[in-house]
Every structure is written in structure tokens, then in C-alpha cells.
Image 1 (cartoon, helix red, strand yellow):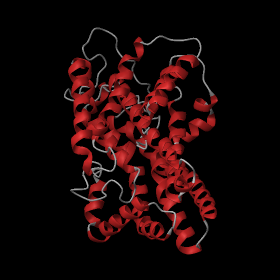
Image 2 (cartoon, rainbow, N blue to C red):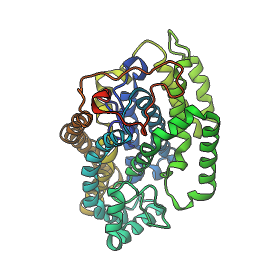
Image 3 (cartoon, one colour):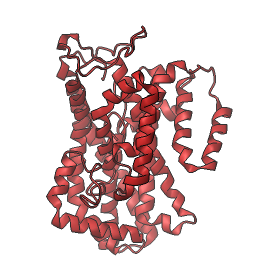
Image 4 (cartoon, helix red, strand yellow):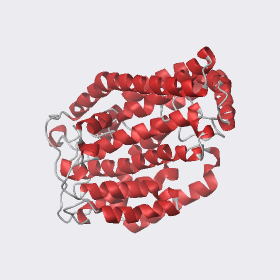
Length: 412
């Protein structure tokens, strides 16, 4: 979501995976992003190497990845709302920082994806465990690569591939770097987030109803040309859940212990309908915010390291899976289980090394540069959210320009 916000979508110093949040409020989000990113990796390995085809009830292997992305979207709504509440900066400065968070690492991964894309078509065509829909989609990808390559490159450079339907540019969302459909969605959200959050605070009922109507209308009447819910109205519900959670969290009760019984009761909803899984996961994470203890699985060193690199992990893994399939099926002609072994080894090792390099030499320099845009001291802490009776207390007001010396740091 975003190199520091969301997603694939992001992570914590900024937000896929905004401002560096107070640990008491946002603890666990960094680690959660790490595990969500690797859930997506595991799902895609299973899907592209054929495990979903040979394992009984293998269709369930799709669920972790799909729901992980939805949780990423909720987290993004939450943390960007926190950024808007706690920082006062012009809209231009706000969006420039969002740009620096997501574009540098994205462009590196996009270049890798463009180079490996032709191999992916050969791999899927050759591999006997590929699904029929994969063969169909990759044949379209091959045609688009040869006949409309530059149209797709331009759409991806502008992060508009998620807005364009198959009727306009076929397979736009899945070309080159499939996980980046959610990054396009994230960028759409960044562009309108300040106004959306302002409306949600000033006109909550109208804004909620409008968001839900747009979400329903899109999914009932306009989703036919989209493989993924990559246009903003299609995923508006999940952003709304995140935004609403941040606005209401100060009204939620604090607990001395984690409410396991209540969370297990909520989990029963997922048994009734799997669409509730992202909501249950999010409720469980919010409950973690509201109690004093920290858990190594969310706040340990390993979890935080995984979260810090989750953006690169999310973007980079698909090209490496394609490369593993190409070597296995096209070059080495391996059996299913050897293909699984090689794909897992190559993907995990490649992602660990690649995400570390991108994090150190691409993301971190961009992160360090972002505070300098406003002439700020990067070590200065973010201001606390105001609580006085202001209809937009502490809010980001993009239409009211401030001088650089009036701005305060808080993103990193």
C-alpha cells in the first residue's frame, strides 16, 4: 500500500501501511503491516504455483491475501486521519510528502516488474498447474505488452492504472506490478483525504450516507470493468471504517486486559460471512490499542522490522514469483513440489534482500528528505490533537496557507 501508510498499498514512520504516531495510540500497527504483507506473499505463492488447484478446498487460500489488503486499506484510513488531525500544513506540502512516501520505491519495483513481465506470460503458458483464468488474463497481458506498452507505462507512472477500467485499457490493474492496484487506490485516497475527513467531521451523517451510497452504486453497477476494487468508491467503505475509528477512538473505553472473550464473540461474525474478516481483524487491533500491554508478535523487534519493510515486500514479491515460475516451468521443467520449493525459496530470499536494499537506499533517503520540504526539524515531535471546541480541531486545512516557520514536524 504506501511506503509509510498502507500497504500494499505501507508502514509507520509515515502513516499500503503517516506521522510517527504516539506508541500508546498506534502500537502494533507497524508489526501488523509486516504480517499482513507476508500474508499477501503467501497467498500469491499459493495461487500462482498451483497449490489452490491441488489442495482440497484450495479456494480458501485466496482469503488471507484478499482480507489482508482490506485491512491495509482500513489502516490507511486510520493513520491518514491521524495525520490530518495532528498536523497543520498546506495541501501542497501534504501531497508532496505523500508522493515521497510512495513513488520512489514504487518506481524501482515498477521497473523490475516491466522487465520481468514478458517472462511471466511464458511461465504461466508453460506451467501445467496454471488456472484457466490465469491463462486468459496473461494472454491479454501479452497482447497489451506488445501493442499498448506505452499507454500502460504512462498509466502506471501516474498511478492511474486503478482508475482505468478494462473497457478503457485492458488489464491495466494487473500489468507489470499487480499489487500496485492498491497503491493506485491509496494515491486516489491521499488526493481527497483532507476534504473527505473535513466533511466527515462537519457533516458526519451526510458523509457516511454518501460514502455508502457511492460504494453500493459502484459495486452494483460500475464494477464490471474492474478486476479489483481499485477505484476509490469501490473501497470507500474500508477507508471510512479507518477514518471513523480514528475520529471515535478517544471515546472508546480503556481496558486493563485484552478483551479476548469479546473478540472471539466478534469473530463469530466471520463464520457467518467471510466478508466480516477484515472488520474482525481491525476490531481486534483497536482493542489492542486500548489496553496497556504490548505483545512481541506485534511490537517485538522482528515484527517491527517486518513492518518497516512491508511496503517493499508487498510490491516486490510478484515479479519474483513470476521469475521462479519461469525458471521452474520454462527452463528447468520441474515437478509441482520442486516448483513450490524453488518459488518459495526464490521469493522469500529475493524479497528479504530486495526489500532491505529498497528500504535502506530508496525509502529511507526519501523519508529523510520529506521533513525538509517545510523547512522543519525532523526530530521535532508532532503536535497533539487539539481538544477545544473547534469544528475542525487540529485539522489540516489545505486552503489556509501557512508560512514554513509556522509548520511543525511530526511525520518522522
